[in-house]
Image (tube, rainbow, N blue to C red):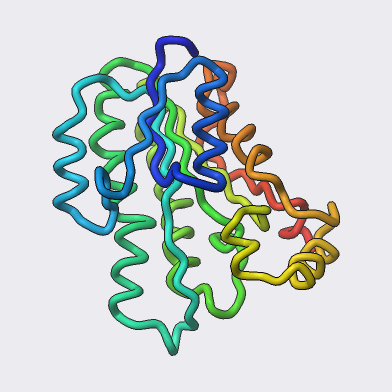
Length: 222
């Protein structure tokens, strides 16, 4: 993969940081814009960032996302609009712009980070589940439209991952309870999610496209 360039959103910590490390270990040059450089809640920021790109992007990883916790009856209009814009609309616009260059060159890889909550759900994930279900649909649509032009598009849907955010939002006892409820009896490490992304984004992947791969330790099988 030496000589390839990737764009990874939401790369400052957690799964995003591990994705950057994995891609760089494979010889890929990674663009990892900060929120100041690429604010997915702002159409103007997305437009300005795309206009600033001077080289090709061979791999696009849509990782950034937000997850305001609220039920369907509680969620505010602002949270609905911001969640859909950050998690779905801006990734759609990035795919449209960057995917065009990939199709023109005849090679590209798009990996969208979805979520287990795009396949199953639980109370309090209303806007987030809707946005990740949209990501899954976008993945399949792009795979169908771009496959004949050498662009493979997939999604990875993590379950419970041992990130700083998980540790901030849950006590050690709660994390232990979550782990005990999984078939593998543990949370994923960010590096394990990144390894799946790396395969899908690499030249080793030659035939997998349009898939939403659940990396959830078997949670969705329960």
